[in-house]
Image (tube, helix red, strand yellow):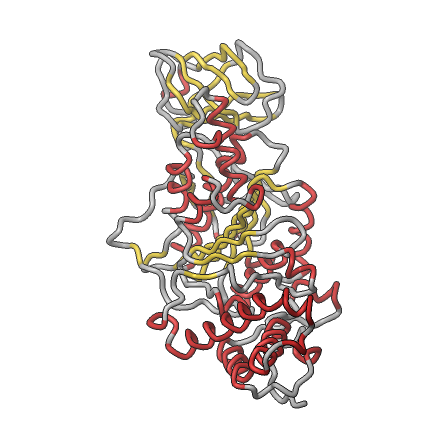
Length: 466
């Protein structure tokens, strides 16, 4: 457990007393009120239990959320003011580790030897030091780089349900940052199932990117206070790595919607009236407080990939629209694509980026991306007609568009490094220029004589002939 700097100071001379316990919420009586967001602690057997102050009820009582299991808490227990907000131990040695909200190891390894502590409620750098989004950050994934490119220092939302390859895509991004850009990744598991977290840890280790990765977990079985704050804890590590290593930092959060859900639980426990569709009235503030810290400075950049669950596939849900307002790129994973064997299962027509502009991407990239979208959109329009009447009933022009679109659809698949052990296919990273050359070839008819199966699950079309 990291010791807070004022642990032995005067703040601890008059401990508070727990007067009420309501599950993860406790009411504590103090002689002198600790400020909001202050970390408090008590002993629970051999463990230290942490709380965070969320409300002042009167001149003596505060309402706090537990950042630990609540079983064993009882009235009359002494609670001490740590003298500071919750903070985590930081050190360059944190890479390759699996930690919890407080920076304690979950991987069975030795505790971190901190060079400093960092407040999880740190403020974003001043605007004068912030740097705007930069150039395209190549991921080596054809469909992403072509149609919804990552931007250095930008935020990308990954929208998808279970079983469509969301975690695999996240791991491939982490592999790309480690190998192509020599950067590091910070993974925040917010409300992860223990099984999912365990599998992800082993998969990252098998993929060989664990030494360049830090994983911070607040699991599904933990209190809402832990799930609500673990994202900020992981973000503090990402900021530290950005400022000290001055490298490309990829901040991955899975799942932002569970962060919102935890905030909703906390809000209800604190007695606040719910707002739109039952969400907390502080929804937009809480999301913005985290998102606004994901930015780049002159020292380094943080590029973020955030998995977002969409309840009932409703993109107008208040939580989803609030998160969307902060994103630069939207990647929609489609169960229909996965059902066709198209992996990564990215929906090329729904996915997009705010920076899909010829001035940002260049005229050639923009024109090719738009051409690919037009072909795929026309194919989608004609699918019902093809099903009912057959391909032969289409005009010669439409037949040509459909055949090219089908080849493009298959070309935009590729084997991943992180799935090589399961598929037997060696993973590939495809440079953006090679993707543009190939897609231009499809659009101009250079590969019209190539069979569709020759386009599936391969790197580039270089050297391919009928």
